[in-house]
Length: 427
Image 1: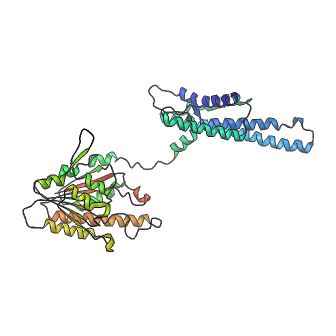
Image 2: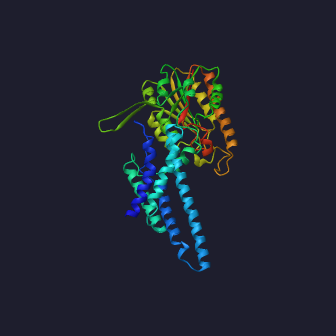
Image 3: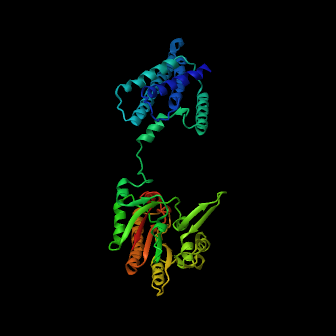
């Protein structure tokens, strides 16, 4: 048991001393008690040191055997030196990790790895070594014990992994895609709420909600600015909001919620905007260029409260879905009806739905060509909406993205912020 206690204490010494000497009141640094890499290297050090002692040629008489034994001893001495250097290197990386968190320079703290590693080597100098198989088993059990304890009490892990921490700290960081930059927030209205439709619906006139398929906010804000130029000359308000879920079906329901409540047993009761408007005598209509059976739209769209639905061709018919231009023409015909009735029309676009035509094979996609095709199709859909808004200035258009391009290739997805979608209110 003492053989195992020595490397545990020695590795804890190297791990804890720098932490204590750099400790500040109120700091929030989670750190393990024992350096796993130290523990492994110290066990290896004892093993190699034992080989040097066993291979000593002092008691050998035969010249050939003596030379062979001396060569083995020399190799073991070199390995011993490499092990000590590796121990120092890991201790140095561990110290740099601590100082980087605090933003401190190395200074006199640079002597700590040499002192602690020197003491650890001295403690292990006469420790009886384990066999390689025993070392492997000990390290395996130690790792399992760390993971088990970490799952139950993450605030104080058993083991510390300096090399892994250093690699994580020094590796190139991907662009943050979870939150919008302050420059964007300062220029546009942003919200986490999904009440855009309810907030901008004008009950005194006809309203059109347009959900644009896969319209997200690009990391390149200039790209978003170019998209907005399509709506120049039309009274508009621009912003962005964060979607809880990245699905078109969820967006179609989420954007139409008027009120959601829960009773005493937790059952949710949702009232949708089309239901409220229909009770006020407003005609409610829904347009989608695809098959009504996709995601069971034929059922949940009627439950939301739409009187009329206009879907495209059935998938089983073998015909292509209706294009956005055809759906826009359908919308134009509904808005051009000469009657006194107010309308609430929702249109989910389709042209930018992934996978795009001509880019169906996920293993043979040119991201540059895909980006060009997506940009062209999105601009075409937005232009259709802009033309309708100009033709019908008495109608309010609420245009939103349903989600960022989550079904596109990963390289293309990385060009957009996660779950953030734009909205533009016209007229």
